[in-house]
Length: 383
Ligand code: NAD
Image 1 (cartoon, rainbow, N blue to C red):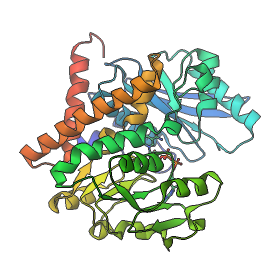
Image 2 (image 1 turned 90 degrees about the horizontal axis):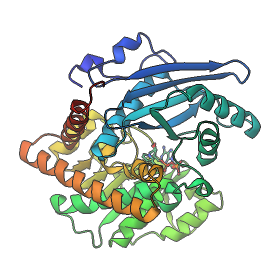
Image 3 (image 1 turned 120 degrees about the vertical axis):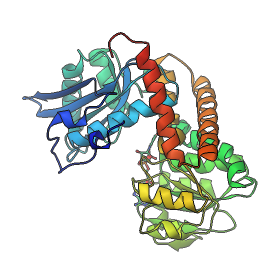
């Protein structure tokens, strides 16, 4: 985006303001507000750019989700999908509702949402916060398209297989020589021991790393000699938190930032590394599983210190790559091969460019992705 004033940023909660302020030369192609009286459905869909093909994007359900958030996330999907070389543009949908509502009510709302977007054939909904494969199954039943489906409908269970965590491990593998880091014995800290974090730890362990610290919303655990990943997973699977983990040293969850390690993986919330804690970080590589895991100011400080920070939409693209392969009728094996191929190539290119220009990897990644969107747009008569 050329005009920073046009960058979709957050606004007062719940306010979109003038939708024209989100428009720039990349998009959005369409912005739709839908309501349905009998179910109480209120939702917005932002189809940002469809030059590369029908747009894939998550459907977020939250009581406080905003239209502005939806614009920003739709653009992020355009860049992520273009960077990954997928034949898909970017979009996002937001349903303003409490996802913990009764199952039957949720089904009615989701089905009403599906009906309301049936005509938006250039949008392929996927799961996001507050929606899951079951919800995608309802949408597919209504309108014949959705990704992140149950296995019985041809879905690839990406969180169970660890598509995003696998991609993060590949990204770290490519980055490690540039950080002068030998993966054999490299120490990993994971913030957010959930679907992304667990598998990132597991796939990095397969590459010789050891998990020395992990946290979840309940607390953190540390062992310089290496934590037992299976034991931590068993605790989480039993419905308990890391705070309940026996026979390990416990820390406060926010102490994870200062743990002695080589690779630090934010896999929980946005803004995990920011101005007020970046100086405590001791790792040489940061691989962003969470979206916007590092603030701009923190990115600059990491760069100045020589820490290699791998941009979120490059390193955590495994999930959407998997969804695109699923949409094309592919298998899990094909999905993992595509993730490896795309993330390996992109991390190498971004770090090579950053190495020769001296600019931040995130700036190089944005430029690379935007150029790919523009190339796709140049092939289209109507964009
Ligand atoms: P998840 O709900 O499975 O796991 C999140 C974990 O973070 C949980 O264990 C939770 O307890 C923990 N957590 C929450 N707040 C925390 C805090 N303040 N400190 C430490 N831990 C905390 O979610 P997920 O699917 O693993 O997604 C994690 C992040 O990665 C999210 O930001 C998501 O948007 C992003 N992401 C996920 C995917 C994917 O494929 N699932 C793809 C791209 C990006």
